[in-house]
Length: 616
Image (tube, rainbow, N blue to C red; front, side):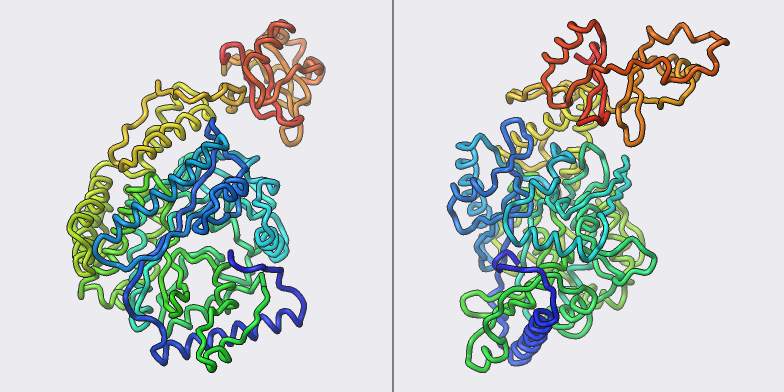
């Protein structure tokens, strides 16, 4: 989709033209596979590196287009969020030192981005979900100003007909409505491509599904979203819901979300995978199609199957079949989409080598896994890994086994054999598989982030903890050391970066509040029970309308004559408040000027926190 000038698919004529090209593309693919035109070798690998752009204080920076222009390199392209970019690495033949060579190429391109980012007071972060992201960053105004993203958003919203309902339950609970597909911008991935011989495609596609859960468990890196601790790989739940165009109804036209793990093993031909997707998911977008794919084949030309690839680009399977043309030859590949970006480049390359090794190292014992294993168990394994990471248990070989045992005793030996089979040099095998083994024995990215964040929150408010966490992650990434070697952050960890303290760093967000009609007797006891000296008064959706102080209402503590008195009669309506983006000095000055010890923190007229003299 990124290479096409797309428009929303609407109108009988446009739909008829699009579906005509879509069907002709399928016929062309069938013809090329049947006549041995799809390349069988040499096997190549490729990858896409998504990354976040942050300011000096590690908050998202909306300068992707300016940075893209400054980088001026065709390997880089936009993403839906204006604080994200993507690197498309050159494909390489699988064998020899390809992983260490790709590691070097990736490092060179990331260094190029870092040099240009530094000139724009920005930094580059590799992470599945940026810890400092907040609700305002997913507003439509932060969408990259490129036509195809707005077209996709408009088409998805029109098809859904209502806001996107996000509900993710982990250690914490996240539940809210959102009005655009911008939630997709929270996710940054390390997408890995492996070219597949068309004669083996269905068999290896099913194998890629079978191994997804255990592979993901070792690679989880996204446990935090908006300061909440959710799944070990929250991207899986978030992306599934962020572009889900099904309405909230028991009568769903589509049994699967456009982002899904599928529901069954694949059978038949490569084209059947595409036919199933086309049948399940209506096309949202179209583009200009100059040539008919069948006519191109008749003229000896290789078609790019633009209509088919356009539809495929809006169906986000975690393992996705992809068609491409390279060097004038058509090829098929499997795209692994479930691995997060980060925590470091060496971790990412280890993930790639591990996945390819397992894909290529399958023993005869698993040659008919689609007949021996229920697909529901494969899908369950994937979601167990997403939720619990290395803490998951997997169903494998007819029984349940811990992730550590399965990875160490089955998958790592299998990966080693697979890498040897395709001719990877011993130095690369040892280097990258040792990273995975150390991660299994010690910690992965999600474990490091969870333990570090919990520690930081013992002495810091969540917003400050998130910035310190991101700053320390950046320092470790700069050294390109595996996450298994990162030290867990202590509660006293700070940062030497110049992060200007604002109200949101110190304010309390877990606050009690009351309403105007509440009885004073209840409020007095509630404040005493919880040792609260200031009580905000709200109505509706946390709209701040008043404030109570202990000094003002303690006289009612044992007053039986005031049982019927309500909050509205006693509260202070002339409220001195402050914004979450204001500096601490402003809060101190306001408290001193008005002789008060607390300030409600508001966004507009909505209460989002409270800051006291003790917080300052």
